[in-house]
Image (cartoon, rainbow, N blue to C red; front, side, top):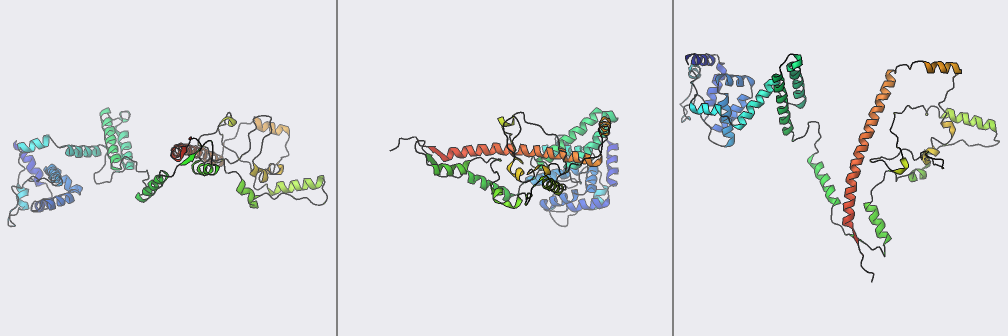
Length: 418
């Protein structure tokens, strides 16, 4: 017992005198709310927290703050005999520095042995920070937590010389702190964008307008009002990405192809010269493009792709011997004649043996430019698939919305005609 008291006395004497004066000033504050604010300000500094833990008053300060925040009567702090009643009653720093910390009372032992839930949470939170090597005064973010977990996991992994128990502590600490961050952000990740209140309000108002009460349309199968039906159809039909066509483009002749006009005598030499001139004119805009491999549809005429976008070409696939059709816009622009298809073709003065030798050689490795093109193609295909999935989800929601709206708009009138 004597050794314990002497050890506590030595710890008290090693306390920074400036910290002792601050604690004396805190005890001299008469209003407990003002005192609580001062305690919170002081505990924001890590050096004061260390001194409070060293002298054994840290838990008392936390209990004092918890009581004040709960609106109940706070307990007496260490070295505080009774509430101050007059201004002449003061406590000197010399008195506290010369005191020996007394052994805890039964009430204090019960309090320390049975901490409250919030104090348990604070202690476990601090322990998790220490396990991962994080400081309390440093802001805890998702990236900081991941980096600390990576370093601690490598240091304590059994394969790296650590123990399974230490590695388990690191994993538990990371899981606990991750859950804390998740709750702080409302169950969202930091990278998830949150809409502003005004944007969210406008979107809700727009959705509510879709469900506004309207006058239903009565349809009689025996006497159909074609105007009412067409109006209702335009309001409720599901848009199709292939329904646009080229009507607007045909009315605008700016994008049309300016073909070669023949005048005067027409013979083989005139045609060949016109063909060569047209091929040279389009040579700079028509290069060979290496496309990424794409999946092919087994029976394109027996179904449609879910989440499809607007097609870039309406050319019919060659599936049988029947007559097929070419895309109208491409026929008038890039595929108006065969010269545009051979504009970039260049023939070398090589014989069959030279081509055969090149074929038998091992393929050369791809250069940096070709590898970059392949990576761009892979990113493009991934983005294309992501857009298709998004459109598929939007189509599903739109179909449900249109179906519900149709049920509210249409009333079948099957009564007898008068």
